[in-house]
View 1: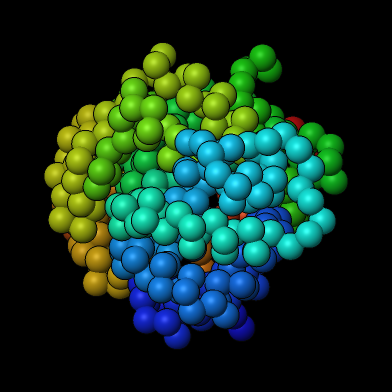
View 2: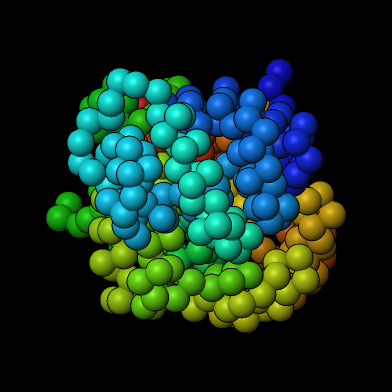
Amino acid sequence: MIRLPDVHARDPQGLARYFRYFGEVETPRLHSKVYTAFSLGIAEDEALLDLAAQVDPGQPAPNVLYAAVQDLLLEDPDGSATARDLVRFYPAITGETIPETSPFPAFRAFCLAQADRLLPRLRNGKTQTCVVHRCTAILPALAHLPRVTQAGGRVGLLEIGPGAGLNLRLDRYRYEYLRSGERVACWGQADTTPVLECELRGSALPPLPEALELVARRGLELEPIDLADPLALRWQRALIWPEHVLRTRLLEQALAHAADVPVEIEQGDATCDLAAAVGRLPTGVPRVVFATAVLYQIPEAGQAAITRELARASEAAPVDFLVMDSTGQGGSRLDHFVYEEGALQARRALANVDSHGRWMEWTEPGRSLGDDA
């Protein structure tokens, strides 16, 4: 069984283990040959491990290092010989096919040549990734919640670590659930963009809302992102992996909705500010907190504190907590936690999911794909 190494380690051995895991498990699973080559190369490279050690221990070193490099390439892809050599392996930037040669030598040369420019990005960079495709898991999870169904789809939503807040606009997107490439379920207006496709595994169809009205769209973020800041938007794009051209397009389409659908993102730490943030959700509607690919970055003590915050918030009214995160065993899962009367009352595993929401295996009892709609 493959287990996630310590993402906070910054000693050479600990970093090497994490980069090796990243290159053997995470990057193949997300179909990035470029980052696979980078990761396995860094795991054996003392100079690059020293550079990666500059990443804030609270952040995953591979993601921040790779985003820092791509941020420089986006800033000036033709600025130097090493940049021109490396950018050839970023089809999301160039629109060209990736060369057959190994990208690692070009990556290493660029990092060592640009180390001084990389350092501030490594020390300050955050993985505030907004993967709108993850909404394909959150949408059916909301439909599954009894309280939301009983309220006619009305819900007050709070996201932990929302980044740019694009997933708080999930009701404005189009969803298409496929099996063997054929559409078996859909939700949202037919002419809406982005269109989020999700391949279904197993025999169950995930539930979809008959109605959904987000009466509150709130987020709690350590460092809220200013969508009016072009540097912040460039960093959002830099966090996307080189081969993920579709993901870049979906990000741009989701950003087009941002001005029309306001969200409220307050600065705060979920380990100590979450109960108060939940308390600011409207009364009289179900209160749902969700987090996607966030908790794995938080040490166990911080996760325990979040649990206490949710329990405290539930003293006033129930709280449903949806978590889509790594299992620490090479996979991801969607879980539902029920907090009532100051305590965790129930936990249910809803689905096995791709960490970017591209496929789902709904495991809660539900309608079979063979049943009539």
